Length: 468
Ligand SMILES: Cc1cc2nc3c(=O)[nH]c(=O)nc-3n(C[C@H](O)[C@H](O)[C@H](O)COP(=O)(O)OP(=O)(O)OC[C@H]3O[C@@H](n4cnc5c(N)ncnc54)[C@H](O)[C@@H]3O)c2cc1C
Image (cartoon, rainbow, N blue to C red):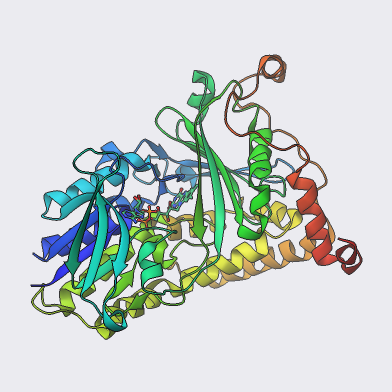
């Protein structure tokens, strides 16, 4: 009878374990911390709720309004009432706290027959030529001891669902990937400010908040998650970029109190090898986060499920041990289904997050109803949306316009957006008393926007480039 270990109890691991356990395969799910709060914005597309049978109780907020804010503070609203129908409120972006969502999915996998182990996997012996059987050494915390009890388990197959710092990936010599660094503060707000974020999320773009990504304010049940991300080469700037988001949103976050500070790597592309022997990677361990949006929760859950379904099929529900070639069928199916999505979003990021003028044009483009519908159809439902010829021409013209203008101008300074619920006088008086309490401390010598502007100019102007 096939024995499978799933390492990592996030969305990818739990969804894999659930499928295996349902098929009657002996499954162990290892999670080092059962109350783990994965640093994450927690935004999920609507289709995930149905597809993964998620209860409403794990969704803090149903966001129907997305506000895009450009470097010059132009605000463009994407309102689902307009994109779809004002009478039908069934469409939304789900905002979750990961500690709640992950616990639900993990417990469900356990209730279906998975052996859930509260343990940190510390070593994997991969057998000859990495073909197994595999011996997993782990510290078992189920006894409640802080040091854990050293134990081991032999299995025939391993699914690596252990995130961006995957130990399974190291054991199977999966090769490295580039990562982005994401930073987030969870901030409690006064009632008026929190009410403004009731069903609204904000995305800020600009050199001050990120040279290659976006900053966000996402609502949770009693606080907002405020964060940003950037490629690894800019990681020393991450705190000053976070300061940039805080600065731009400060009138909307006035008198906020930081209750949690979190940071984590985000993979930028798949690893060179995702299946070796009878070890397969899924979710962040494999590198399945999309560019542009930084979305990874749905893709983690889906890849865990697809990998496990392949194992069930190839093993005839656990009667046989699947081969490496069998496991690679999951990769083929995955790449066929999502390969194009990753490429398109990567191109969009390279074009529209590259400098402030392109970002300005990107926000302007989001005012177009066709662009809004395309974006939301493909995000919420994860389907490839066909454009009619007129939409194609319009999108091409808008893109060319954005690119052309991006070559010529750049933003030189950034201002806070106005408060959405108070007069400027009132909010300035509040800011004079205090801004945001707690959270990051930033080295003032590291002014992200100036450094980033210099590097952007350097990339375009060889004379500046030589000097720096
Ligand atoms: C700041 C930030 C914001 C983000 N915002 C969003 C967003 O809004 N929407 C979105 O879709 N995506 C977002 N993402 C991406 C998303 O968080 C990931 O893509 C997703 O969590 C991947 O799920 P996973 O199950 O593959 O891995 P993870 O969620 O990382 O889960 C891995 C699990 O493995 C456990 N583990 C690790 N090592 C071991 C070990 N040796 N032994 C036992 N257990 C182990 C960990 O404790 C963890 O629970 C964000 C990421 C970051 C960093």
